[in-house]
Amino acid sequence: MTKPTSPAPAAPAVSAAAHSSNFIRNIIEDDLRSGRHHGRVATRFPPEPNGYLHIGHAKSICLNFGIARDFDGECHMRFDDTNPAKEETEYVDSILDSVRWMGFDWGVHLYFASDYFGQLYAYAEMLVARGDAYVDSLSADDIRAYRGTLTEPGRDSPHRSRTPEENLALFRQMKAGAFADGAHVLRLKLDMRSPNINLRDPVIYRIRHHAHHRTGEAWCIYPLYDYTHALSDALEHITHSVCTLEFEDHRPLYDWFVENLPVPSRPHQYEFARLNLTYAVLSKRKLIALVEGGHVDGWDDPRMPTLVGVRRRGYTPAGMQLFCERIGVSKSDSWIDMSVLEQAIRDDLEAQAPRATAVLAPLKLVIDNLAPDHVEACSAPVHPHHPEMGRREFPLTRELWIEREDFEETPPKGYFRLSPGAQVRLRYGYVVRCTGCDKDSDGRVVAVHCELLPETKSGTPGSDAVKVKGNIHWVSIAHALATEVRLYDRLFAVPHPGAGERDFKLDLNPHSKTTLTAYCEPGLAAAVPEQRFQFERHGYFVADLRDSRPGVPVFNRAVTLKDSWTKN
Image (cartoon, rainbow, N blue to C red; front, side):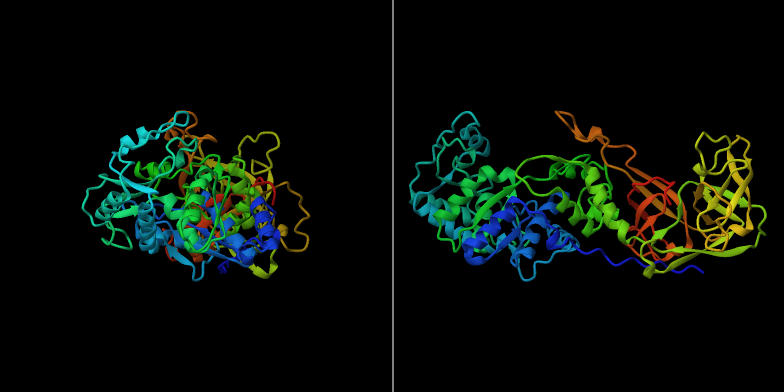
């Protein structure tokens, strides 16, 4: 009776021609004109595998992979896996899956910083041997105290004067596992009085007796991020190392490493403003607190700003790319309103999502002049702007579900839906006239009664002879698919959670998730996980990736409709 609705073809990724210019693209164009890097463009996306990617990472993914795509270059997928205590293969797999889901591929260019541990150690021995690095035996607290502040210079460690021979012997003992965690670190010998606190003898190696997710027990000392990041870029012949603004003050250290070690290339670091999104938190620490505190249902909770979360929510890769294109790339920090993201997702889904009918707050409608066994086929386009997607069919019967808000016994002014004596059109069906209602013992309306006007069926000659202002949707009670529907709202109730010294968890939206049983047109029983629909009037929904079962989809609302129910 009802033909399964097929998804529209996926919207293409944002094309190269669609990209607006930005300062990084301008730099690359200048470099190509000048012949710098011999005409090569090589970028990288280097997450640490210690958590799940979030929407902020999507901006970096689109930027780095997009540059490589548009300039016929390459983008390396690299894991900066230097902290074995926090890194897991689970995160590696999730990150790779999320980048693929976003629409990008690294080809043969998959790398791990741990691949370079041997070379990084050799470089460190060079620094020690020539007196540019030393083993410090201060505690972590003392190192922080000696470093000084943004307004006060640091002080030299008492171990700074160790000879290269002493340092080399200690460093090799560190590598051999002779010392406990925290007993020593290797520090670069730069300038403890530098106005840039990052240049005050930064730590470049620490002891960690912890198995690594790839190298196992082979190492018990691990390089720190700044050291690893710069040298990995150089070893991979990256041309444009693009990162967020918080690393701007780290660039002199980045440059020092690539200029003072015999690396095979000289990459340059460029910084752009990170994504700040209202009604969300994009701090890994805060996201962990939400998960571990039970405030959400895991990392892939559809309210979470993680990529696994927005995927379950029903967001699309093309919509995410469109959002990243719209917000642009700059060097100035600013806040992007959540509505910009929602509109990008809405714009992508509008063009491709099949339409369907679902009643979320059901009220029985009885058409008294139809026989109890009456079954009549009605039809509607799968998509109003894509006739090639065909039509969907659904039955009209004597008893229907309608939305509870579509009936008012005493209607306010301007109310054009059902009320005693009023006429409305059943969308894709007939005009009906309300004749009354039934109530329970508490006076609550439990059923509405109507009579059908036989010559008014949609799509038949003369069907528009009876003019009505109201147009409501419905499903047959006998044929409806009853299924779980989850209505998601923004996770936080305020634009800037935790502003000032406030605990950000106090700003959680208590109404961010509503679960209900909805009644849908029967064709939706064929929906498959991640198939998206526009539920006419209610918004865009997706069959949940995790909880849907064959014949029993569970639907999550991705975004609401921009237009109101009266626009049909």
